[in-house]
Image 1 (cartoon, rainbow, N blue to C red):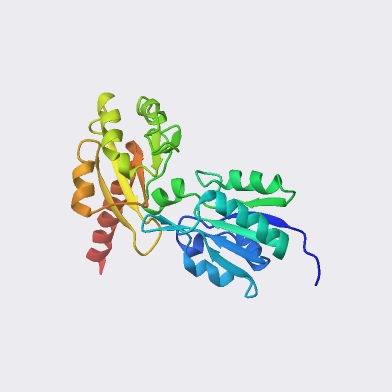
Image 2: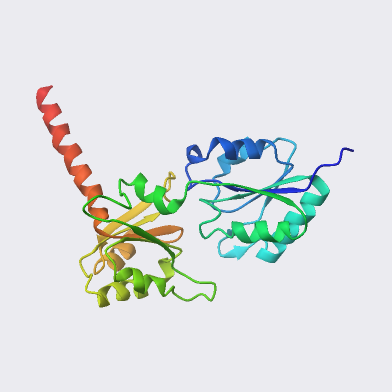
Length: 258
């Protein structure tokens, strides 16, 4: 049996649409001896995996963890030592609230060779898929990407700081904290600030709601929106409607010519 150098490659699977994975990520999957993948990974991507590789689901479904993080860390090291190249396939970009950096650090401490393949982050791509840019000249000069829930299961106080700015604010893992988020923006007088919530973005299951800080909780209830979802707050949300109106206007013109 040939010895294989123990290696971990942390790979971003993108926001959900299987077409939004990178070529470099596919090459990593084809060279893998073991693939550990999460619940947010589109299972179509598993078709790219080396057919001789072991596939292990390590994500969370229906609120239940298949493996705790410590167990995942240990599994990475154990499989790398016994099998060789372990690919840790994670939704979005593993370095944006994905714990990819922690897993690489753990593996490196055991002498594993480590590498990272960036993924397209849901923080930008999910909004873009609904024609919502996170920056736009005249509307937003910058954007924040914030976790809605900290490791202590509390709301991030960075949201309070972001609410004071004119930047676009993108909140991940924030649906359970939506009432608190709304209150933070209301305290800054941002009652009429446009808000978009997009669930299962870039997938066939995608659902969304558009409103304002004052109306978004009602819209979430009416549309039964829930995790996994991103929350986008900012004037850039209006761009989506302006594009739809322009498309409708010119579509009517074209129909008149037929």
